[in-house]
Image 1 (cartoon, rainbow, N blue to C red):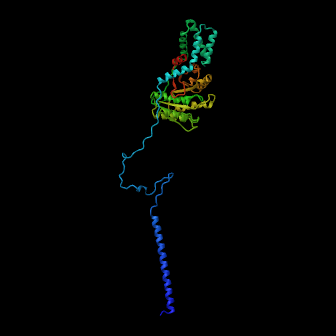
Image 2: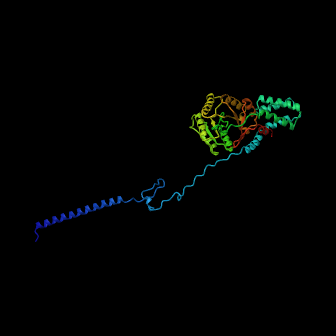
Image 3: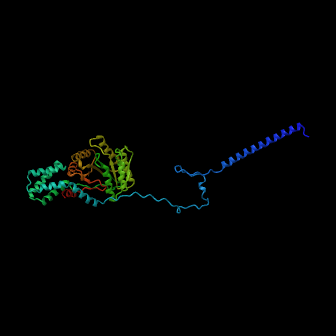
Length: 396
């Protein structure tokens, strides 16, 4: 029979056993939770779909393919197709250019020749008729002195030879050709010599078309299979270097340029140096446009020329004149010739005016030949000047 003391003792022991069991169960559960967390941390994370804007390779992507996959050789690899090369234009030949430009010149300058022929073909050439002839020539920018010289010769021949009509045209043609002076040396010195390229500087006032002239001249030389380098020494006008480089890229010609607002003489020097390294035939240097009244800017042209000559001789200094400016262009030419040794003239926009007499006036004033003429905005609208073809275009 259990005594009360024994019952109390057994109850205490049972309570203790229950507490121990509960504690054991709690410890075991906690340990299992920790192990479970550790295992989950060691497993690779589930691959999330790559976002399009931040697509990056994730761990394990390279395991999708077995490691024993054969390595591809260069021959087995499909390389990306090469980007198409820039299209290089082929400039028009000199012969085709001359034929087309002569026709264009005849259309734009024909009024001068027609006016003179109409006056010379009159039945009676009195003083009034000769005064009209003088007015026509002066209006066409031939200049006072050349006009008086031409009229005097025409009067003498017409009186002595007593001719008219078709003969009058022949006499006018002969005298105009003599006035334009075909004896002047109009060849461009653009051939490589003594292990150095020919160097051509292009100068003029703002807006005459110097950069365009350099680009068109490059096309003329490329058509003759010459190796050309362009120098963008016009560092003051915005986008001048870009414009010149565009001209060069079209015919596969290198353009040397410097920082905007940089030293033009430095760019010119680097251009010539590059031409020497490439064994080029010619280096064409574009210069900044400047008003002929700005003494400082004009003096800078002399500096550019002197810096170039530390490396190579300057073979040509081409002065670009806008034919539409008439006598103002003549004044510009006179000032440039005083500052730098001009060797040749380029007349641009000759198709936009009936005043072709500027050819005669500027040559007579400077004693320098017109070597190139521009007759339009097309890429190949420039050609060497020919005295006889010019006069024939006037009289056609």
